[in-house]
Length: 389
Ligand code: KIV
Ligand code: ZN
Image 1 (cartoon, protein in one colour):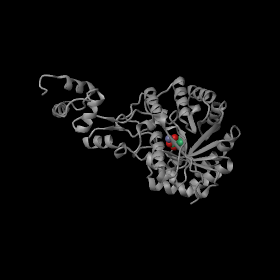
Image 2 (cartoon, protein in one colour):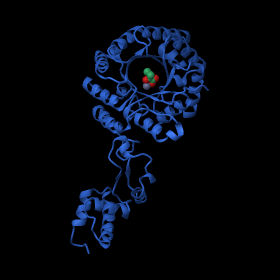
Image 3 (cartoon, rainbow, N blue to C red):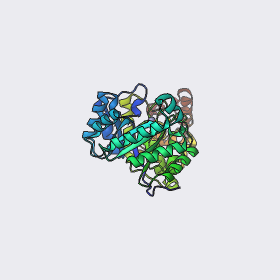
Image 4 (cartoon, protein in one colour):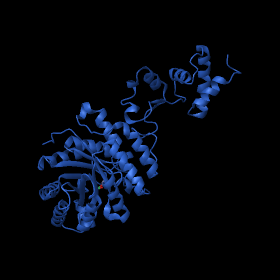
């Protein structure tokens, strides 16, 4: 298997295109621009700013980002036809680094039922589209929609033809979230071996079976050097691979993968909050990296461990992703060490041990009734004089 020599994984963010395809999400121009600026601040390599043929508003949104956002490559999506490609070219024309991203479906079911085209005609359309896109820009990405349900010899044939026509990045989408890590690793390995080294392979995974992040990482093991993903994993149906999870997986397990992104990880949380607020899509509390509970410890055993050494139960620091230090959540599972620490943090460092012991019993009773215990509850416990010895 021929591997790209570089260990740099390009992060292609499609929050503003595939992410905006989440049911119920519609971002206006200034919201898109605000997100694009945050993506640039975070250091993403490529921003897919929209689908310019979709509406005049989409075209204007892509144009504004192309005019105003500097740093990342700016791309717009286009089906494999002249009108789409012209709209995408217009959208990205003012960009410092413009790219056109064109796609056509390659699986038997999509070609027969959706496109009503024979495989030869699909190859011809793909080649013509890439050639046409190259008349506008030097940087052209080609995607084979539903690639993971396509036949490998056909995929290789169409990829070789579009590379010959001038495509510089080849994207292999798992459009319906169907593949497995093992399968996609092998698929990328086979495509990598069939294409010249200068061509960048890209993965674009959907999360229908909850495997989008694992599949994206497996694709990188097979030779992908660009990963397409969205902030908070928003996107069609169950969403796309989550940007923050991919970035932190490569960062935290660089010992294992030996691959790296150049994302400023301290900007991840801010990006997550911004996208959640503007898209109206809440982040589930237990979501990795950016969920409310991702750095919260509740059980006594864990709290005691973290108070002794954070690494006992933390594989990455909250600060590294731009959050406050990990919190010890006070609840019925909390132990004495965390209770004592919470009292100290509230200014009750000098309470004698027997009093803390008594309060701890009262705290457990309260936690049983109430669930989570907040600072005010702890203050009330300490200040309630009547039955304290
Ligand atoms: O999921 C998909 O196949 C896509 C392509 C248009 C890249 O979003
Ligand atoms: Zn997609």
